[in-house]
Length: 333
Image (cartoon, one colour):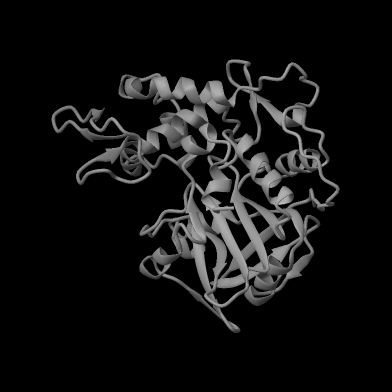
């Protein structure tokens, strides 16, 4: 492997908040837990009850449904949008349905709390709904960056998001690499560039018509081939705001999600971390595109399955919060 290119999501992957919808840490975390809590719906009164005690990314048994999916199914009949769904699921822990997850919820919030007395570095934390300060970026991302630098890995990192948090996340990473984080230190002379102005993806007419624009709206990549070359040649740390509107208009089809390239021949390895990168799911957020010489082809769910846990990682947010070496271990570095 000549180079490692890491694409990494923000919300529910390295960030537990959503400034776009003004949703705080507590609500975002509760909403996430509702997606990994499994139970059944009472046929008489329609009440969802948690019947499986272990939180899981995948359906543990046939016939079970997560609380998030239960609310989502109800919303289909009432034209409720995804923001409203997050609002409803954000009340999961405080509701009767969420009694069994309250202990882990508190444990996760405790781990996310900003423990340093120095509160001048406001870039590094976010104030929750209860005015408690929490880490803006998960410490596990800082641990990954430090490991890559210390091991002298040739890498680049691309933050991928649909939201508006990219500039602050890039600033956090830049300050960390300058050894200016008050809690997490990195001593190195290695210079790693950070571009704090994220790029923007635009897609039209065909999923494979991918353009990349800079922060001023100027076209950097005119087509899919040029965008592929950009991903392998990019240096340092940068960010991309993916196009949510086309994914939404497609009915959340995986072929219109975040474009990500895989290849069986490239010496440059690309990986992506995202909590919504779901194997065997037509609504996975990652649009897997197979690169073979000069050809690019969308992979269906069956073809894409082989790249999970190899190039594509569905992030377990609970583990990423509790284990600072989560991303390091996933990459077997």
